[in-house]
Length: 331
Figure 1: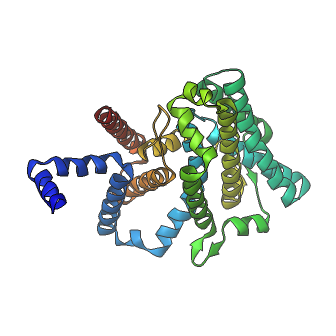
Figure 2: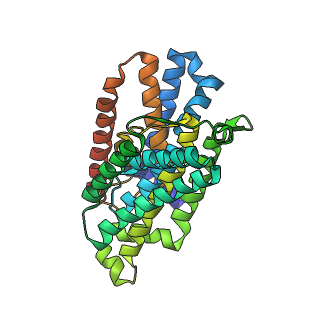
Figure 3: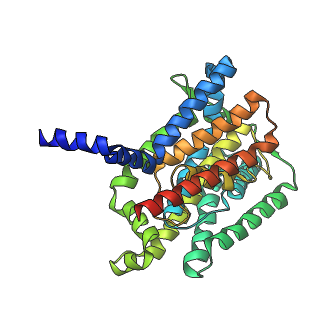
């Protein structure tokens, strides 16, 4: 009875509604779900074919593998680091795999090459940041240029075709009516969401991002942790680079240019912070879905793709302002 009276009092003076409002604000995922839902309704009303099986599966197939790289980006942002080399790294992975495949004819050797190149790029990034104490922005910007240059040197500026039917069929396969790449991404995102919230090792990422000096004082090897996250990001770019090369049936030296900034924007829109210490896999994936829908909406409405950067930038700025607003309120 007393609880009912307290709640009634809260509603009357507005404090109860304020609590609900701030709880809603602080969980970025709620906003994203509503925005995504509204966009789907709007797009389907403008063009009913938007909800067609063919269109939805095309979106799922084309965008799913970005989720892998996005999760790698997210974990780095949690520790207050960046990786600007993911787009060029994915391209280098594809070029390396396609070149070895063309020279040897061995699928295993080609895929293995890609799986080595990605983590190697991440290892170099981690070394530069944790051992040489370079800012991650500068270190990964340098590896971005190096990787892109290597792509052009190896290919002489020309695409390397991938005609192996096994690879093409594998990465363009469907299971239970859904693209295999989409199923892999969903399962991996669920797995990473669980361990990021529950596993002791990954919880240390948040401690490191919030207060690295404090994390060191309680015995967390922050340099090793951050280094491993760069290697993990490299592994994710390797997986995505291999799959996209098979899907595109060619390795293109200039592929994925600018992807890194979009991925960082998706993670921040999903609730990650440039200050580190916060972020969720679910929020990042919702950010990916929202940005994908925005791109599709521009096509449906007939807006020039040249406006995509302005629209995405506006949403990113709005998300950042909301984050600052919420943080000040919490403090």
